[in-house]
Length: 509
Image 1 (tube, rainbow, N blue to C red):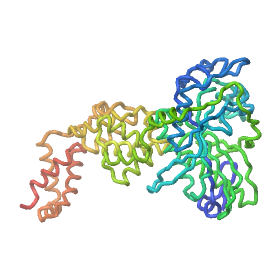
Image 2 (cartoon, rainbow, N blue to C red; image 1 turned 120 degrees about the vertical axis):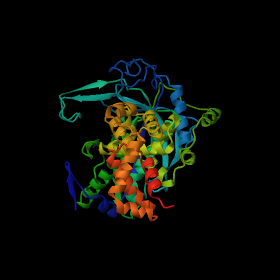
Image 3 (cartoon, rainbow, N blue to C red; image 1 turned 135 degrees about the vertical axis):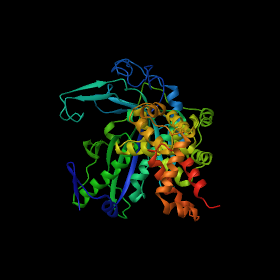
């Protein structure tokens, strides 16, 4: 049964993957964290006033000549090595010709048939702990385009807009595009594989320090190519390319949506159109962009103004020595250091919390506290807003130091677990740091032992049956009385102290 989402019909996902085999191709664009652009000396700072970081080279003015950014080339080589690629001994830049308003030269300086890195792979861990190998076809160097802003419409897209503005600050920023070979055989797990691959790649690039990989700012973007073929068929179907997907969650959702949309078209007797698609985060659908061009449409030819890139083997090996610990080995090391079970580590990994937990432990929190506070209420709220924990925490200004401060309030005896959860909710609501929230809400354990003893005596007297069970040796029944004591003291009692007092009075012997 097909359903209509937005303007197009979709087949339920389970029905779609029962009838068709999905094939994926993921193209990840990574903005390199260099101080200057790929072919000129303009700065690359994010968020500058429009068109203030431009020059004749990145604006494509007549007579301006480009010069290759050496650091960008080294970063590209390091990325290739980290992805187990071969590094070209000699390669060239090429001109990719097409017209778009945000591309001032009317061509993009990229690489075509001679990429800097090729024939690699990346092993990614899925949610059940299994490993899936994604083969890398190439990683090539290129420059980013500018950015168009469509004004006057309700969607922010060109359709319906009254006019458009162009900011060329981003034009010429160094990019590495990482292209996978067709990912086949994943079946119903294709969306999970896509998300895991982009997540693993993001973690690797961040560890290498070659990019800040902030997907929400566009410094890492994923184009999702997808096609379906009849179950058991060896051929690939017609593909679509969903452009500029900018979160891990959206990568997974985009794959699922396109699988259902393709399946609805094919089961209805239609043909899939080879085209680019726009992803809509708010509605979870894609819409048609433009007909997809093939390589020959871009009329590639070697860039005449740039010399070839020919890294020596000594240079390549020196760069190899700078690579960080592989993600899988790092995860095993951190798991051992933190004392997490396989399930706990998998949960942290699937939630994208490894870096955040590591920073929190480094700031002084215990691994247990770091996992507890980041994977609890923060994760629940982030999921509710359709974003990841790291992005959500950054937006709120909640830091590892807040977790450390909260843990110290608990360990110091000021807060019990229930109070700590209330304080954490206040921190997430923007009420201040943990101590500030606790002070404002008047949250503090009652230190008056006399008041606690009186509450214990009252609860024992009010629950003679439970008290008798404890006297008879059923110590586990003490939990019911502790709950009553906490209620009596409006949640401001020390549960451990209450337990000791109850057992002192009732435990046999």
